Length: 154
Image (tube, rainbow, N blue to C red):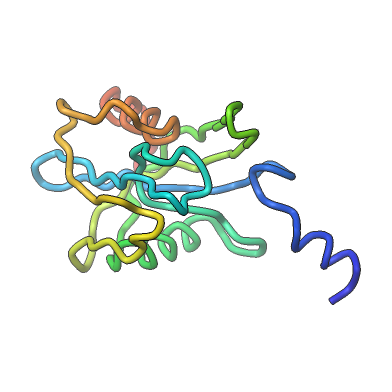
């Protein structure tokens, strides 16, 4: 590993440079949304609810990266059906800046289960009329855009 690579390996996305991630709003046939409660080993906003997704790694394309993250987190396969506007997610209290790509997806195969209990305290379906109060910005904006019909169908 070169000295430059060693320096880069120590840098943290979202803190030392703008991080790029993405997530999916997954709805079931009852119009309920699947949310995860961020656990103690989460990168930020511990105790807040979010949609599934994560970091897009160097050299990875967005949709395959998000599908990979969902498979790792929930053990399901998804089909992307819509694209919401991106979110500039700036978390001033934690000194982080993320750009989040936001998608709408349906479950293609499997039943969601929590494969990352260290990062996710709870996994639950919520009615769009009875959502928790502490929802992270990219998820909150995705829900708002979904309800307003503001997304591109894929």
